[in-house]
Length: 473
Image 1 (tube, rainbow, N blue to C red):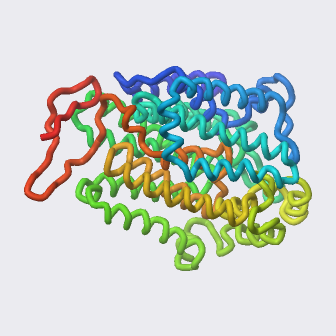
Image 2 (spheres, rainbow, N blue to C red):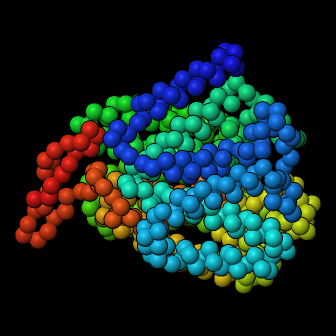
Image 3 (cartoon, rainbow, N blue to C red):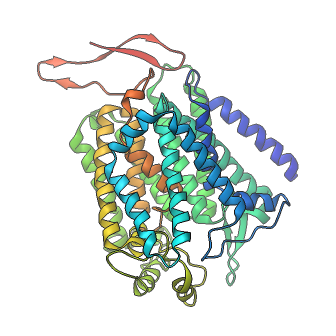
């Protein structure tokens, strides 16, 4: 098919996906487009890169010691400013969310402090401001009047664009979506992103979203939008699976399979009611993954996934970067390890490497043991938050647990706890407490609970266009 014709066909397909996947009756503010635009950029390429593809200007990869180019700084700065303006009108909700997320605030403040001992304090400060942009986008979603509807719309507006366009790029614009290894000539598929691992992360995040929507559609058998939602999200899941096979991002493939199992088990009412079962599922997922990767208990599984005992060279990277680590207590400064002399030393051994391929090691290199300890408190706090969400709101709680667990596991072999990374943004979105006071209408998805001497249930007393209305008896 001619690329121009293919582009028109895919554009029509994207429109069809939005028609099938829309949430009738759900309302969200215009401010929601700000995090949508942010995620479009984070999940694809910098604006300066797109302009260069369109023949406007010349794209140059960022110098390791500098902070990109002026176009990208202006775009990200404008989105952050617009986000802050939007949040200014939601003062009480923003203050309440921040006051109940002290571990996250302390972690961000320590990251700010660490810019002082960076080799490039100005660059580190700019990167910290950009990282705050991630938090601003999360706050916009969580302070919407119906934040669950806002979450669904975010996932739809971003995933329904990035996933199909990645397929289009690989099939009809390979010059933009396929690179080749210098020595082996092996194809490296990146789709709409810049690397195969980033494409894998995009497919993972929105693959989990489509799995969540599919399970929700299976539960809500009497809604008019059930079949259209099944069609739209099945299509996205199939495309994500194809993209994962093409880019061969084994970390993302394994995490998506694990997320599917976890979501499936959490959608069994008998299991979902039991808090002890949820703890067991989370612990089992993390421990099995960790033991397979690091304790040698799953060598056969690694080989079947195309991984050798070095995890495709990752253990060699870990040994190398540890020899170059700075102060063990405070690190090298926020997002500062991969700059200057250290980067050149790494490249003299392994050219092109710009991450430790382990999110926890990356934290240590940049922030030291102090940063790792603060982040551990964020993880523990986040776990408490997502497990509480399962009791308060089963529908949104299940995807929050999935994003939390997958982020923890994903960072065993990839550095995903970094600014402007999908895994990091959705980890933050998962662990921040539900702004229950802002929920209006809609179906919470809570399961019936049993009490001693009394059986509680939910009786449908009416129905909105999409969601049933329940009354407790």
